[in-house]
Image 1 (cartoon, rainbow, N blue to C red):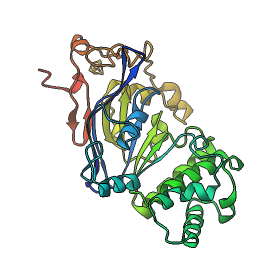
Image 2 (image 1 turned 45 degrees about the vertical axis):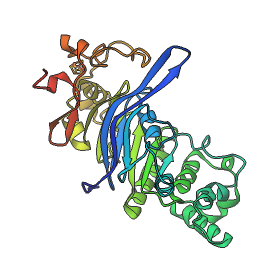
Image 3 (image 1 turned 90 degrees about the vertical axis):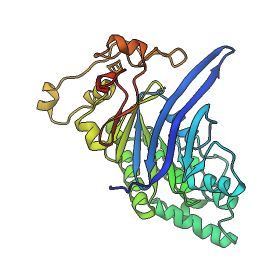
Image 4 (image 1 turned 135 degrees about the horizontal axis):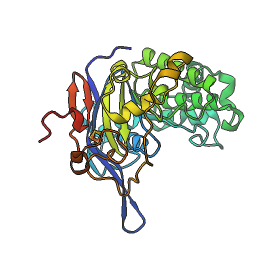
Length: 327
Ligand code: SF4
């Protein structure tokens, strides 16, 4: 879908560190900067441990930021807020989780799970209105009102994810962070959940940050895609542009690993195999964090961190290969 250039979320130099043991620090997110436009889906991809989920959770305030800023409709998410702004943030930003079962209270009925936000924010003036709202939400996500009095364990994975989506929708959000919402589902169910999310986006003009671990999963749902490696955002572009002209060697390697359905093309294409293991975010490499595995690494890469640059129109990357004024 197309999106208008209206910034809904601004992430500026975001850092999130975690203390590990007594003396060590895990650099989960390092200087990440990007905007999310109203009505778009921004895909965020990278291997597990690259900081994509931590970025999402820090944006929505499940984690405090170590440094940097996040703005939602101009409100400083991690700054001091008045009551009204806090209420707005709690309602307008919602999250859908990877494991819908773990995120649904097993002792609550579906009715009470979905109505929790309605109750907290006082969105129903009577028990009858509350019930009708939940029934409507169940129908919106492809379930029915008979499901309201059941418990989470009575549902399949795909149905539980629908309940998680209904719970998020109950408070009429504008922005939803979907943290690997389809990774745990069967392939046949994945498409159904993605289709549902797209339908809801069109109907309600929702904005999504869609987090996934591989590029093939985000291709069809995302307007733009950001690629993360070891806590850094390394590339960001419109989806087609990223697939057709990847600039960062890490993105090129990820794309080369996606199987192509045509066996002829599949046989002849070149795969870029990355050498070495993913370094630890407790002790990340100096300079460009990707230099220990990059097939194009140069001397400068070991010493100097590449700048985050708009290399082409709306196409950002952090790589010395594309910085014409390195110093
Ligand atoms: Fe590779 Fe250097 Fe670019 Fe990093 S900055 S991705 S090491 S070429």
